[in-house]
Image (cartoon, rainbow, N blue to C red; front, side):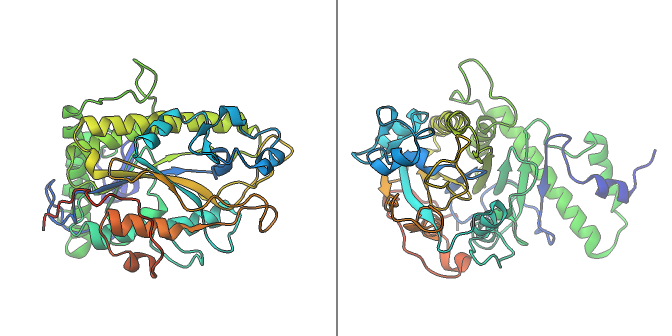
Amino acid sequence: MSVTRRDFLAAGLVGVGAGVIVPPILAKGVFAAGIDGIHNNRVLVVVQLAGGNDGLNTVVPYADPAYAASRPTVGVRPESVLHLDAQVGLNPALPKLKSLYEAGQMAIVQGVGYDKPTYSHFENLYVWEYADPQRRQRDGWLGTLLGKQLDSQGHPLAGCALGEATTPPELRAGNATVSVIQSAKGYTVQGGPGRQATAPLLYSRTPGIYGALFDQALGTAESGMKVLADGAASYKPAAQYAATGVAPAANTLGSALQLTAQLIATEPSVKICHVVLGGFDTHQQESTRQTTLLAELDTAISAFMQDIAAHGQADRVVLMTWSEFGRRIKENGSAGTDHGAAAPLFIVGKPVKGGLYGEQPSLTSTVDSGNLKFTVDFRSVYQTLIRDWLQGDAGAVLGASYPELPMFTSQSPVFNPA
């Protein structure tokens, strides 16, 4: 049976059960793998903790009597907390992150949020993804940064979403090229080599911009597939992302971060990578559910940091965690916690100046039904990452200027290909 243009476009550039490469609607020309047009060699890895991670049970204010009083069931006992100082400590499920903190390679930003917060998943996601509490922006903050500043030539793997099925909203922008890769093995044109070979013929006689756009999109996809396949052949993980002797299961944070490490180690044009760990909407049975998720986070991030260090990439990689909101101070009646506001986030990497940043919000001076008041605007974190790490123009992305956090060493190496 013959394949029509309609058939091919309906199927899309999709790897069966795997992923899709998403070029911008007005795709730039395709360039061979390399660093032309790349702002510098620094990489940002973004780990989304989807669902609203409970910050009070992640960075625990164990010395505050109001904490134990508010959480008689789900609170972490003081003797179990991994103490950071005399006031706060990490959840006991995070011993490897505690080691990174002690090594000076993890910054904990406390009380991150924004003024007049909403408690809806959808609205809060929009705020963080578009860096806009008014929810008016139409381009994601990372996509804007990538397409307008970090990658001027549309490299197929400059922006990547790993282990995901669709482009994260924060990476969506009309001028950003983003690859969505669920697995390295399945990252190919749907229908296999036959359809991939047939595709160019379908548009060989199509004049004008539509034929050109299709050709550019397919060329971008093929370039990304080749780079990924070549990298898989040369890369060997240098850390255990799961239990000893066991490969990380598909669709886990470990598998996504292992693929991220492979890309960083083998493809110099990688700039922004995005992965997701879901399940943090802990209205019920929080102690068990969050502990399991934090343990997965702990193992995966630690392995990732070991892996990139072993491949000589640690000086150029910084990882950030975020979640759409924290949880309320008091536990609910189902051994869980409900939607809240401010929460901590982690910035991890060798270039990071580790320590505590911001101020732990008070558990007694609250706003709006027992929620924490934020002490650090989330856009301050974004500005610090954009300006001080990725060396971009934060004002052009955020539309205003915010106080910065001194989280990076002045000795952090920079490579400017231009």
